Image 1 (cartoon, each protein chain N blue to C red):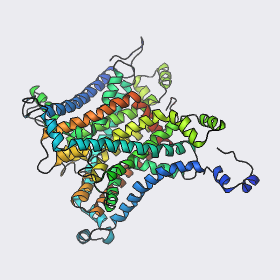
Image 2 (image 1 turned 30 degrees about the vertical axis):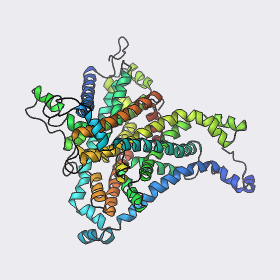
Image 3 (image 1 turned 90 degrees about the vertical axis):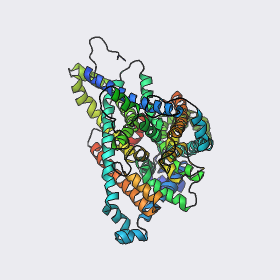
Image 4 (image 1 turned 135 degrees about the vertical axis):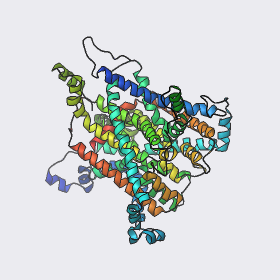
Amino acid sequence: MTSRTGGAQRSTASLRHRLAERGIDPTLLLLVPGLVVAVALFVYPFSYGIGLTVQPTAAMQEQWGGGVFANYVAFFRDPFVFDSIGITMRLALPAALFNVLASIPVAMVLRHRFRGKRLLTSLLVLPITLGTVLTAQGLLIFAGRQGWLNRALLQAGLIDEPLQLVNNYLGVMFSLVITGFPFAFLLISSYLSGIDPSLEQAARTLGAGWWQRFRRIVLPLLAPGLATTFVLTFVLAFSVFPSARLVGDAMGSTRVMSLMAFRAFGEQNDYAMASTIALMMGAVELLVVVAVLGLRSLLYRGTTGGKG
Amino acid sequence: MAATVAPGERRLAARPSTWLVWAGMTAFGVFLLGILVAVVVDSFGRQWFATWLPEGFTTDRYAEAWDRFSLGEVVGVTVGVALLVVVISVLVGVPAAYVLARREFPGKRVVMLLFLLPVLMPPITYGIPLATVMYSFGLGRTLTAVVLVNLVPSVPFVILTMTPFIEQINPAIESAARMCGARTRQVFTRVLAPLLVPGILAAGILVLVRTVGLFELTFLVSGPGSDTLVVAIYRGMTAAGGGEARQLISAMSVIYTATMLAMLVVALRFVNPTQLVAQVKEARDDD
């Protein structure tokens, strides 16, 4: 960093020097390729997409009215499209909530040292590499009506006839948990490892039981991390697409927004309506994210005493 | 399995809850293994309907799937696209991460936000306008388009993981190099690059895994000749008339998993995943 000298001297310095004092120098050119990619492949298409939403097709305008805003009118008026918001939320919110809540105890148990911990961690990370499409194929075979799961439950006498576990809401939920849980677990255990253990030891010295230590020490320190994890898992679950089609009921209980957007894009070739649904999808997601992060800002912010 | 507990010390989690956790994890493991093993068994099976195991085993499905979906080409495209995306996003992302880690400049927050947005947004939200632009430029269904759309999440990902990594490198090392007369290029090639290798490897491997697994964006712009493995599997499953034979899809899925696992094994040799996540977390907290 250049050191600042007196005001009188600064005025006589060259423009280059004065810019460098404010942090603008040739090193910033390193930022250019990244910015070019971001602007050309993200900002430009995004603005183009926003422009597209107000250029509805003639058919849309005729059917829904509203002039240039016909696509938006269609989005809010057409129950087939509009209901997909609720359907997506009914999947994404419980899935994200479950993944975060289930990760807490698992991460708490796994932070102790024990034999085979590395193996177990690797096993938990495995699904990240499986991807949604393979998970879907596996679920169809494993949890289908003829699958091992139903077969085992039947033989054990727990059920009388095969459970319908795939091609419905439940199938997509399974797939969201299998892909989302490891992700939430990884994040939460890294947050947990950032909390200084001596805080808990101090509480124990003062006679706090495990529940008190968790409730009064760990949870408040972990809460901001939980909020962040929730947001990131929610983002993952919210944009569910392949599994909603493959293990879900694509025309019914798992008719999620991304499926609707793709239907307009790939099947109806109505790029304007597709962009409208896609943008509304982003808007809905952003609302949830902002709400959660807003709540998060009310929580404790600062050092957790450890490395975090 | 037993945690090391000092004499007279109680565990943090009480016994019943510990058992509950283990039960939950066992259920998760059963599902996970069931899914994996079912796909593998199915891919080697001849006929498999209402029995525990298929009637016989064969490797014919692989040969059949390989021809039917021209998997040689698909695997080539998948690996080629992934490597290209890794190289480009590292070359573009690391210099940007360096600037963001070391400099203060007007508009830095805006730049950070710009790189954060693609990570936080659902891929479909920017994917559909992006695909529309690609088609209107005549790039639809080409390899170029597949590589370009994959850069959108990858470049920010590299930047977000590398920024905290660079922050932890002591700037005094660079200053010392400059005092000894090194020029900017020399500082980068002789001093920073060797220090950055572990971080670049970690970020690169994660980008590789993500790119191979990324479905939505590739699916929107790819076509015959530019489909990656995931997209080919999806197309096989949703083909008109109830999809392709299940065993063929399973064989294809096994090939996909084998590719992924090979990369994961390599990745875990170089990287401790929890460490990198911790660094990502700090990047997000800074913003």
